[in-house]
Image (tube, rainbow, N blue to C red; front, side, top):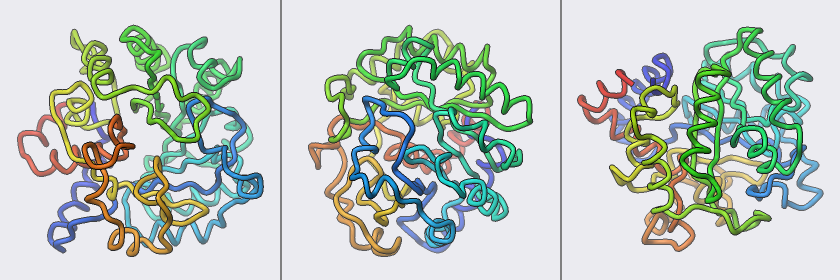
Length: 333
């Protein structure tokens, strides 16, 4: 099973509209970062390396909603930092769901008990919990023991309450096909989450751990072996089949980072939420004044090993929607 039917239908209609309007660049998903602060210090993340005065800031809800309306994306991924540290996160979620945006709240799950009574289950809302491996592996990746057990308990509580729960797993060079298979089997078969997202780690310049990011060939080999023997089809992965083809080297795509713009306390980040080459003050400025042709593999050395979903999933989605064969394949899962 790929992207949920309701979401796929809305995104498909949105893509048709963009084509009719002859727009060449537009947003599919907004990566919204209403804060950078986090209650963990993961070795592979550079977000909490911002200055202390910036880590104390929280984006006003009205400002966040304005960014959502400005870019028009049908899907909003609320990230950070840890979004549940935002004092008005439930208000932001409510307003986005009211606008029928598909909302993924990315969280390490530790603070879910504080907020879960203030958010209502909805087909437009999903918890997106970071799970980077089974207990020992995950706790090592977040540099704190006990996090995996707490996350699992809070996921089960959300499921009992009727919430849609997805997961997001990042894999590093320390992973093997077995560690990928083990965590996805657990999430799919035992924890029974609704869907799972996965991504090879991107080498943040400010990340404390710079030694364990995957290269392109390493990524392809890792996922080719992990997806073998029919496992890929049995897992409920929240990705288009073409993006999964891309991960295991069956297809190659150009980066379309403009389709998943990032909006944070600093403004619209160029060119994507993984790289910071300055900020635009409006979405229009981001699209029209960013030199998009200078980014991507073979153009910018920082992009050489990137296979992250923020650059390549939208390319795969648009390729899917542009092909009847691939659209039918995506529907079959």
